[in-house]
Length: 369
Image (cartoon, rainbow, N blue to C red; front, side, top):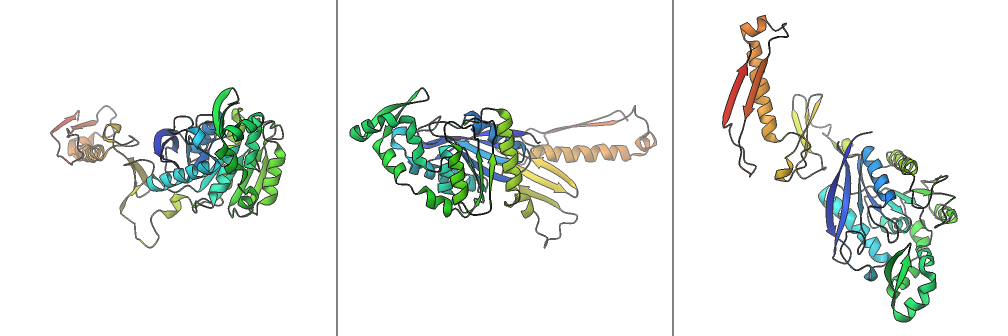
C-alpha cells in the first residue's frame, strides 16, 4: 500500500455557505477520485469517514470527505438544511473535484449519507460506482432518533432535539422534505454499479434496509455482510475491509487516469513527456524513457512539495552533467575504479519569490579528482 497525504479544501455548498473538506491523496497519481458522505449529524472527522477515506488513498484512490452544511467545520445553519440540501451538497463536492482535480467516479455514503449518494448519483454523470455503508432504504428512517419530538416540531415548526447526547434544531421543513422523497424510484433508476455494505449486528439501521436496497437495484450490484461490525464502523479492520472491497470492485468499472496517458498515435520514443498529475496545483509527472520523476513547487510558492522544483531539476541536470564531464577527463577516467576518489558538484541558485527563470547566481565546483 502506498503513502498518502491530506489536503485541506473548501467549496461552496447548496445554500451558498462554504463547506470544509479533507482530500486524502495517494502520493502517486490517483487511479480515481471518490466523494464520501457522512452519516446524519456526524462530520467528516468521524471514524468511518476518516478511516475509509485514508484506506482508499493508500490503495490509490483519492477520497474527499466533507462536512454537510451546518455541521462540523462547514458554515451554515443546520436547522435550515434538509435531505435535499444534503444531496445538492454532494453535487457541489463532485463539481469541486471536477473543476479542481478530476470528476469523481466513486460515491460512498455512510448511513443517511448512503441514501443521499444514491439520490445524487444520477446528477453526477461521471460517477460509476456507488457504495453504501449501513444505509437506510428510506431516508425518513432517521426520524426515529427524535420521534418523541415530532409533534413539537410540527406544531412549533422547529424544535431542539437530543441526538446521541448532542442538541440539534430540526425544522418542519426537514420532516416534510425527507418524507416526500421517493427512495424506491431512486434505487430502481440508479443505473450505476452498486455495492451495499451492512452488518447484521447494526442496531441503528437494521440489515433489512440493506436487503431492500439490494432487491430494488439492478445489476451490476453486490451485497457484502460486515459480520461483527457496528453502525459507526469503529473497528479499524472493518474500515480496511470496506476500502479494500471498494477499490477492488471499482477497478472493474472505472477508467483510471493512467489509461489516458500518451495516446498511441503519438511517437514518444526519445521524448521527455511532462503531464499534470491532478494531485495538486502545480504537480507534474515527467517520463524519460523508462524513468519517471515528479516535479512540483515548494509550499512557500503554493505547491505541495511533492517533487523537486523546475529550478532544482535544472541544477540537478547541470550538476550531473558537470560531474560526468569531470569523470570523463583522462585523469579521472584512469582512476574511476577507485572508490576513494569522486567528484562533488555544488550549484546554488538564488531566485525571487515570483517563479521566473533566472540564471545561476553562484556556481561552485569542488572535486577531489
